[in-house]
Image (tube, rainbow, N blue to C red; front, side):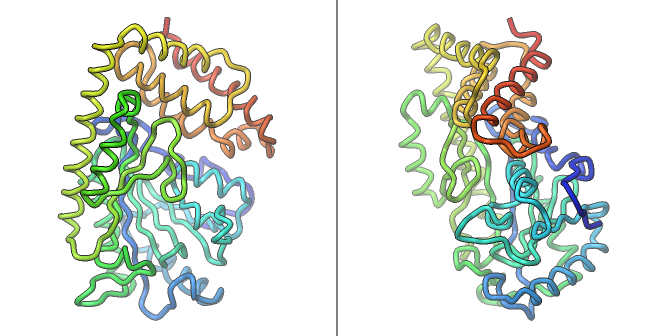
Length: 365
């Protein structure tokens, strides 16, 4: 169905954030796994060169096809080109749409026909850089499950619409780096141990040598805050889907091991100093009256590390995951029912964090 008016989050399957539930493997370190497949339809210009009417015709064709795709049964269609900026920003904060699709990037104004179909843990972004981005998200470090869902969606939709494909190059995409499989797999990972032991530079350099790249919390163009990194493959041409998955799994597993070792070193060599630092972070979140986004992310990083090291009991990873997303500006505005200035957002953020920790962190002493 197509939604009109203010965004009703109850319409979204699981609010679109089941991936926050911390149920997946290594969920204390890896927040989520996301897999995207870039696809374009035969008979249309690439999105950036298509006219408005062409993008709308393509959207209508995809909408008709998705009505017969089982994995997206019960999905919700959101027309971003008909949505308020705060609603688009909120969907972006939930990692459900890209900054480009949401029209939040000055270099990429909101396009006519920009839309997203949202189902349970899967979605289809329409009229982004490519005609379609098939997206699957899972909690924790679970590349195989995310790929299985995206692959099923690709197969079921591909039976209904013709994808642009070249027998030598593979799937054709707007950006040459995505040609081939069109696969982009990424993990959102928390690496405070490597940052505090000053090993992070070596690890990130090693990633790039292995053909992976790193970005901030929201991917390309975003800054690293709170020691949260997004790791993903750089190119797809010349490698199979299995090879790309295996590379990401192998390298991320190594990064997780390095992070776990760094945490052991911190506890061994600076135990009481680290414990004091992490409890101070918790105390600030618990009682602060104003918090900027950067401050909140950095203190949440400390508390998350404390929970992972079992120094701070009584808090669940799920609670910390929710704070990571729901303490952002558009979510706070949605909670308050109006647009907020930066200073009002800082006050609302501190109030929201205090309330959550008071109710869900009641076992903390």
